[in-house]
Amino acid sequence: MEIRYNLKEEDYLNFNIFHVKNSKTAKRALNMQRFLTPIIFIVLSFVLSKVGNMSFFGLFIAFLIVSILWIIFYPRYFYSYVIRNTKKMIKEGKNDGLLGKHHMILSEEGIIDSTSNGETKVVWSGIQTLSEDKHNIYLYNSSVSAYILPKRELDDIEEIKTFFKSKLK
Image (cartoon, rainbow, N blue to C red):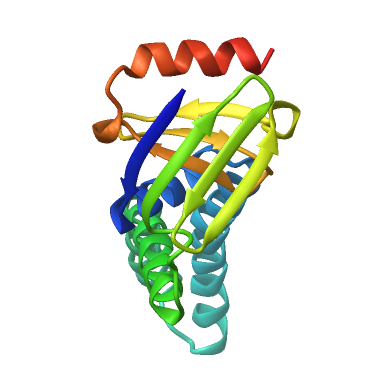
Protein backbone atom coordinates (compact mmCIF):
# COMPACT_ATOMS: atom_id res chain seq x y z
CA MET A 1 0.00 0.00 0.00
CA GLU A 2 1.27 3.49 -0.84
CA ILE A 3 0.25 6.78 0.72
CA ARG A 4 1.27 10.19 -0.54
CA TYR A 5 0.61 13.14 1.72
CA ASN A 6 1.74 16.63 2.54
CA LEU A 7 2.62 17.19 6.20
CA LYS A 8 1.95 20.78 7.27
CA GLU A 9 3.06 22.73 10.32
CA GLU A 10 -0.50 22.48 11.66
CA ASP A 11 -0.25 18.65 11.59
CA TYR A 12 2.98 18.73 13.56
CA LEU A 13 1.48 21.16 16.08
CA ASN A 14 -1.57 18.89 16.46
CA PHE A 15 0.77 15.97 17.14
CA ASN A 16 2.60 17.91 19.85
CA ILE A 17 -0.63 18.91 21.58
CA PHE A 18 -1.96 15.36 21.29
CA HIS A 19 1.25 13.98 22.75
CA VAL A 20 1.36 16.46 25.65
CA LYS A 21 -2.31 15.80 26.50
CA ASN A 22 -1.72 12.02 26.52
CA SER A 23 1.73 11.85 28.12
CA LYS A 24 1.80 10.86 31.80
CA THR A 25 4.89 13.01 32.33
CA ALA A 26 3.34 16.09 30.71
CA LYS A 27 0.07 15.62 32.62
CA ARG A 28 2.01 15.37 35.87
CA ALA A 29 3.96 18.55 35.05
CA LEU A 30 0.76 20.40 34.15
CA ASN A 31 -0.95 19.35 37.38
CA MET A 32 2.07 20.21 39.50
CA GLN A 33 2.27 23.67 37.99
CA ARG A 34 -1.48 24.10 38.05
CA PHE A 35 -2.04 23.20 41.71
CA LEU A 36 1.29 23.80 43.46
CA THR A 37 1.46 27.46 42.43
CA PRO A 38 -1.88 28.34 44.12
CA ILE A 39 -0.69 26.64 47.30
CA ILE A 40 2.41 28.85 47.17
CA PHE A 41 0.13 31.89 46.66
CA ILE A 42 -1.87 31.01 49.77
CA VAL A 43 1.26 30.48 51.87
CA LEU A 44 2.60 33.77 50.51
CA SER A 45 -0.50 35.58 51.77
CA PHE A 46 0.25 34.30 55.29
CA VAL A 47 3.96 35.24 55.09
CA LEU A 48 3.22 38.72 53.71
CA SER A 49 0.64 39.35 56.42
CA LYS A 50 3.22 38.55 59.12
CA VAL A 51 6.19 40.31 57.51
CA GLY A 52 4.35 43.33 56.14
CA ASN A 53 2.02 43.81 59.05
CA MET A 54 -0.96 43.58 56.67
CA SER A 55 -4.38 42.05 57.11
CA PHE A 56 -4.20 38.28 56.56
CA PHE A 57 -7.86 38.13 55.53
CA GLY A 58 -7.44 40.78 52.81
CA LEU A 59 -4.31 39.15 51.40
CA PHE A 60 -5.87 35.69 51.66
CA ILE A 61 -8.95 36.74 49.65
CA ALA A 62 -6.80 38.42 46.97
CA PHE A 63 -4.46 35.45 46.65
CA LEU A 64 -7.40 33.02 46.75
CA ILE A 65 -9.01 34.78 43.77
CA VAL A 66 -5.70 34.73 41.87
CA SER A 67 -5.32 31.03 42.75
CA ILE A 68 -8.78 30.14 41.45
CA LEU A 69 -8.13 32.02 38.21
CA TRP A 70 -4.76 30.29 37.91
CA ILE A 71 -6.32 26.83 38.30
CA ILE A 72 -9.00 27.63 35.71
CA PHE A 73 -6.85 29.30 33.06
CA TYR A 74 -3.40 27.70 33.46
CA PRO A 75 -4.06 24.68 31.18
CA ARG A 76 -4.95 27.00 28.30
CA TYR A 77 -1.70 28.91 28.85
CA PHE A 78 0.27 25.65 29.14
CA TYR A 79 -0.97 24.31 25.79
CA SER A 80 -0.47 27.66 24.05
CA TYR A 81 3.08 27.67 25.45
CA VAL A 82 3.68 24.24 23.89
CA ILE A 83 2.38 25.48 20.52
CA ARG A 84 4.44 28.69 20.68
CA ASN A 85 7.67 26.85 21.50
CA THR A 86 7.05 24.18 18.87
CA LYS A 87 6.59 26.90 16.23
CA LYS A 88 9.85 28.52 17.35
CA MET A 89 11.70 25.19 17.09
CA ILE A 90 10.31 24.57 13.62
CA LYS A 91 11.56 27.99 12.49
CA GLU A 92 15.04 27.41 13.95
CA GLY A 93 16.25 25.24 11.12
CA LYS A 94 15.54 23.35 7.95
CA ASN A 95 12.68 20.91 8.27
CA ASP A 96 12.57 19.42 4.79
CA GLY A 97 12.45 15.86 6.12
CA LEU A 98 9.74 16.66 8.62
CA LEU A 99 7.30 18.95 6.84
CA GLY A 100 6.33 18.76 3.20
CA LYS A 101 5.66 15.91 0.82
CA HIS A 102 5.88 12.33 2.05
CA HIS A 103 5.64 9.07 0.16
CA MET A 104 4.96 6.20 2.52
CA ILE A 105 5.11 2.58 1.43
CA LEU A 106 3.43 0.07 3.73
CA SER A 107 4.63 -3.48 3.17
CA GLU A 108 4.43 -6.78 4.99
CA GLU A 109 7.83 -6.03 6.57
CA GLY A 110 7.27 -2.43 7.68
CA ILE A 111 7.17 1.20 6.63
CA ILE A 112 9.36 3.16 4.23
CA ASP A 113 8.82 6.92 4.43
CA SER A 114 10.45 8.99 1.69
CA THR A 115 10.79 12.78 1.67
CA SER A 116 12.87 15.28 -0.27
CA ASN A 117 15.51 14.84 2.44
CA GLY A 118 15.84 11.09 2.43
CA GLU A 119 14.21 7.88 3.49
CA THR A 120 13.44 6.19 6.79
CA LYS A 121 12.61 2.54 7.27
CA VAL A 122 11.07 0.82 10.24
CA VAL A 123 9.88 -2.76 10.70
CA TRP A 124 6.46 -3.28 12.25
CA SER A 125 7.99 -4.32 15.57
CA GLY A 126 9.55 -0.82 15.67
CA ILE A 127 6.10 0.77 15.84
CA GLN A 128 5.11 0.96 19.50
CA THR A 129 1.54 2.23 19.32
CA LEU A 130 -1.16 3.42 16.97
CA SER A 131 -3.07 6.49 18.15
CA GLU A 132 -5.32 9.04 16.52
CA ASP A 133 -7.25 12.23 17.06
CA LYS A 134 -9.76 13.95 14.82
CA HIS A 135 -6.97 15.35 12.62
CA ASN A 136 -4.30 12.65 12.30
CA ILE A 137 -3.22 9.06 12.75
CA TYR A 138 -0.01 8.65 14.76
CA LEU A 139 2.31 5.69 14.45
CA TYR A 140 4.63 6.04 17.45
CA ASN A 141 8.11 4.74 16.72
CA SER A 142 9.39 5.91 20.12
CA SER A 143 7.93 7.40 23.27
CA VAL A 144 8.26 10.94 21.85
CA SER A 145 8.08 10.65 18.06
CA ALA A 146 5.65 9.29 15.52
CA TYR A 147 4.85 9.09 11.86
CA ILE A 148 2.04 11.60 11.38
CA LEU A 149 -0.62 10.77 8.78
CA PRO A 150 -3.06 13.65 8.18
CA LYS A 151 -6.57 12.23 7.79
CA ARG A 152 -7.47 14.93 5.25
CA GLU A 153 -4.90 13.38 2.88
CA LEU A 154 -6.06 9.76 3.24
CA ASP A 155 -8.56 8.18 0.84
CA ASP A 156 -9.81 5.32 3.01
CA ILE A 157 -9.02 5.95 6.66
CA GLU A 158 -10.73 2.79 7.94
CA GLU A 159 -8.85 0.55 5.50
CA ILE A 160 -5.53 2.09 6.54
CA LYS A 161 -6.32 1.75 10.27
CA THR A 162 -7.37 -1.88 9.76
CA PHE A 163 -4.09 -2.56 7.94
CA PHE A 164 -2.07 -0.95 10.74
CA LYS A 165 -3.94 -2.87 13.44
CA SER A 166 -3.28 -6.15 11.62
CA LYS A 167 0.46 -5.43 11.66
CA LEU A 168 0.70 -4.13 15.22
CA LYS A 169 -0.67 -7.10 17.14
